[in-house]
Image 1 (cartoon, rainbow, N blue to C red):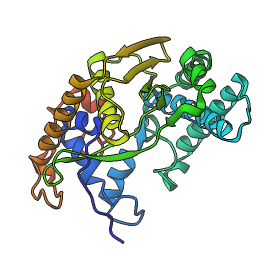
Image 2: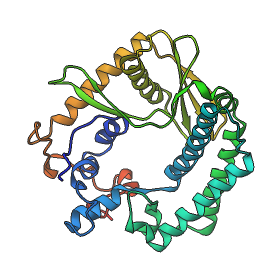
Image 3: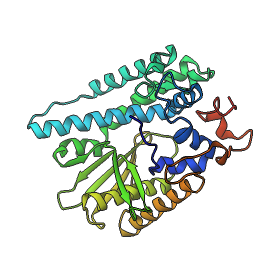
Amino acid sequence: MDIQNELVWSHSRGRALHDCARAYWYTYYGSWGGWVADGDPAVRQAYVEKKLTSRPMWTGTVVHGIAETGLKRAMQDARRGAVREWSLEEMRAAAHRTVNEDIVGSETGAWLERPARRTGFAEHYYALPVTHADWDAAADEIDRQVVNLHGNRIYQRLLVTAARIREVEELRRFAVGDPAFGAQVYLAVDALVADGKGGVVIIDWKTGENHDDAEIGSQLGIYGLYATQELGVPEDQIVAMHVNLRHGTETRHPVGPVEIALARAAVLAGVAEMRAPLRDVANNLADKDDFPTVPEGSDRCRWCNFRRSCGRG
């Protein structure tokens, strides 16, 4: 059965088009169908490159995975009326196992057997000069952030009030705007919790060095749009926070009628941008030549997953 390549907006997809149109094309069009291992070699290569990660991105993936596991365990316990403490030592051990499996699987090439489900590093794929000390530093940073997560007051509060948690990393799709001309949106909220008063609290974990508050606010506005439109939460009863586990900071962002209206407008404007270069909008068909590359020598090429497919490897 053929799977239809649909145009679905997400926060990361909207940002990708602005970063590099050609990389955007490889991500959403040039790699389409590459999950078939014996298909078109160029498509397969782009698909493999789409799945690559890097050490900073990987840090976020592993730490988010530990947070997700911990909260979902707590939710199960709340439903059963039982409590199983997931100790700090167990959390660190789980992260350590993931770290070892991911590095070994990528280094040996075993991940290529199932690139959608296993971790492959750009550092290995492009044979970058990364030392054992570099990998140790990345593993240490993951361990440090898992410790920070365990000790974080918001995470601990979520464990105590797990019966109120409505969603943890659930991939959702919903429509914005007129069905004929609007947009389909994908999102997954790190944690969405009922406040017991008819409202919700939205939590977004961050693990990176630098995050732009305006961009985070925009992302949280999309989550607010989802909460009001799909869950029926009043626009004035949303609390949104991002918690930086690297720096141990918490930032509350306003999400109300103004921010939700801006989010809706941003989605529709973003979808219009994505449709503009398409050869066939109805069937979501795009040609590589309509998605230009960034100038030669751009710093973006140095870290792009597609530099081999793009001829800049």
